[in-house]
Image 1 (tube, rainbow, N blue to C red):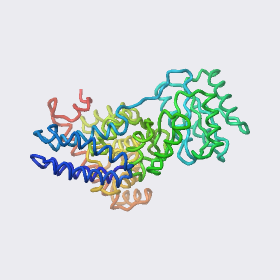
Image 2: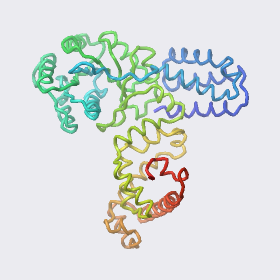
Image 3: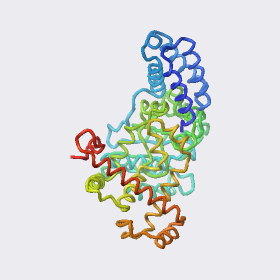
Image 4: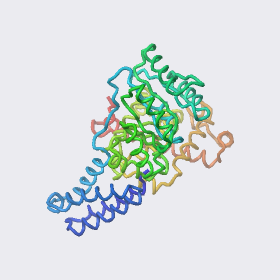
Length: 443
């Protein structure tokens, strides 16, 4: 997502920052490149026009041309205006009622059912007691899918096969009150915005349920069409927000940059991946910084705090201090990192991510998986005492992991390098010199 746009904008800003002063012609030429980059990213032309005009109004003036750091000022202005284009501030869900009803709508195939389950998982992790209602009676196996996801998420699912969707929702709301559920998430059938009969049905569900949130689930891969879909659903139902799915795919980002400006609907969540934890709150400012190559370290930290085992992290620090870092620890750390999702999604949130990915290609992801397979193919004794791994053991490990002996040698060599580097870092004394201090773990 946004890789090409980020690379082009980063290259442009690098050139602007390299100049001691900027003229109006420099700014106009830069805006021309920004305009082309946004259009290539499938951002709606009206949004591009409005955005670049606002940037120009601020950039061609004393704020930039009279600044001691004009290039940095331009970046700040673009960051501010991108943030405003995507909605300005994060808009949380309205869960003030009990039970709060969240109605999920959208086209068939946009990912509503999976997103409903992901949202339930997120709300549950925040201390809520969600109930899922399976109101999609049209798509084959839609109810089965939601029930399976509900079991995986340990969230109850209300369903009534053969019943009318409106009746199902009514029964689900009664069940929510009986079971003291404080959030109800209704998974409705996919429908075209031009299908009057289906739109009338979801309208009837909305009148019955009186939802505090009506969320459109839209596929980011559809680009500008997602904007048209959002506008049509908003006119009919009065959407309170949008969930953009598949933003971890090949989506160019146009939908994320266009929806709020053209439909008036805020993006509240973005879907990344198929796993149930693959739903993120949408922060316009953080997304703007990702687009500009500044990364999104805050989201990465929040994800790590939710996912990683802090006891294991503390135990690792203790082993590093005592120089007892083994292949077993190496494997455990790789497994912990894999909980954060694909390596590419982690890199996406680091400053300069697009250039890092362009330089590294796609080999890093497969390298990590290969290393984990090799480590798992070793015995516990071998992982705890790698010095015993000779030629015959390497051949066995390679056969067991489906790799070559040279791959086993590469993993062992990288482990030795990592251990040597960690020993040097852990051996430095004095607060402020040790990176472990910065992590708050070297007490």
